Amino acid sequence: MNLKAFASTFLFLALIFAEDARSQFPSFRLYPSTANQIEPVIVRHPTNHNIMFASSFTIRLSFKSEGVYVTTDGGATWRGTDTLAGAPVTNHGGDPGPMIDKDGRFILTHQGGFVLGMYSNFSTNQGLTWSANNQIAGDDQDKGSPATDDVPTSPYYGRTYLIWTRFTNPFPAVLSYTTNGGVNWSSITQVNNSLSGRQSVGPQMVIGPEGQCYATWASASLSSPFAELGIGFAKSTNGGVNWSVNENAYQCNGIKTSSLQPWGIRVNGNPWIDVDRTGGPRNGWIYIVEAEKNLAPAGTDPDIVFHRSTDGGTTWSPGVRVNQDPINNGRNQIFPAMRVDENGGINVIYIDGRNSPDSAQTYLSRSTDGGTTWKDYLVSDHKFKPKGIAGAGSGNQGDNLGITSGNNKLWPVWMDDVTGVYQVWTAPIDLSTIGINQISAEVPESFKLMQNYPNPFNPSTKIRFSVPSDARGSVVKIVVYDALGKEVSLLANQYFTPGEYETDFTSSGIASGVYFYSMYVDGKSVATKRMAALK
Image (cartoon, rainbow, N blue to C red):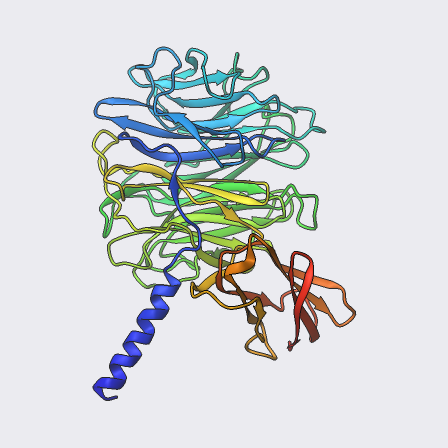
């Protein structure tokens, strides 16, 4: 290849890489401040999806607390503070666990500061004022994760649970619950015993479609390097009183280390659990993700690995690699957080180093077929270099992200220090437009629908369309029909700024044959094209 041809090829590849590395989701901070905000978690109101409550572990010099960030208008505006005003304000130590119960009461669990233990506070006015600290457990505890029963038909409707690790032998997952919005908490129930020579770390809990309690944790070695060797799972059908336990539901190789390169930060695999409660064909399926390496399907660098159970946790599928970058490429994927949205889509966000040798961004992987196949989307619109934070522990920059959904949107939260201090960021993701990429900002003269390519196609094809400057807020709708005129897929239904756009259509779930796709503007047909699916 001559020098000119090489240069042209290099430029072409660079443009492709730049396109692939560009986010379609503008990012913003929930509550801009000068405090470090790490370990963000976000939840939404069980019935009013316009109300969301996020929290973080906040650090300002030697002062530690939990942030309170609230929206009551679906994310259009946010209010907040970096200090949880539950007396005494000096006894707050992070690991926040926000929750909103069936009555709209805010509950926030957290570690103690000067006095060890697990604590909670509650608010009856959407986080404006808070109760005093309520000690749930004393001594050394770790990483509480709350869940609330918001299933109206459940016999335990309204019960809010907290699961965490007790740092005394046998280092089990333990649980307490409140039936009155955090005013009082039950005596502590030990969920499991841990395997010999192991500890149960990073426990998390979720409520099933009939009020079942499902819990998971990483079964980690008690000896250096404290590897996470398996995933434990437990189930309760009587409100967390009794549990059926599988200490090793499946094997894993979590990434627990005190110096993940190239960033030199402390990390954990931290399993995340969720369940389909849509009432659809996968209702009741349970999903777990964990960051792993050196055990297939993970590669030699950290990858996000997914397992599912279709029988209430009795058996588990083989692992599926969630992130779709090339395997064994030396780039890290860490800190997965998962949300099953109201349509049954599985959404996993994580910190990802695929686009830079030393920096990271936030990615989303999404599956609409129960976790069999995945597609990646770049979420954050900027990069940062992970690093430890003074006052957070050696090499610690926080070890979890968060995500929720509502109003047909995803709301991921992550921490990064692109501003010079770690802050909680988000980027709302409209599920009706995910995967629709603006490929040109050049303003076209008219609405236009282009022929798909390739055509015929298997398994996917790309569809392009243009939106002119005189759109004036018009709603653009792209619909796929079969040969009988039955709607097969809605690809777009929203406002677009002027430019040229592209989206994918896959043949998953449809038969071979002729299909038509149409473009509508404010309900009026603009164009229809024909395409053929081959399988």
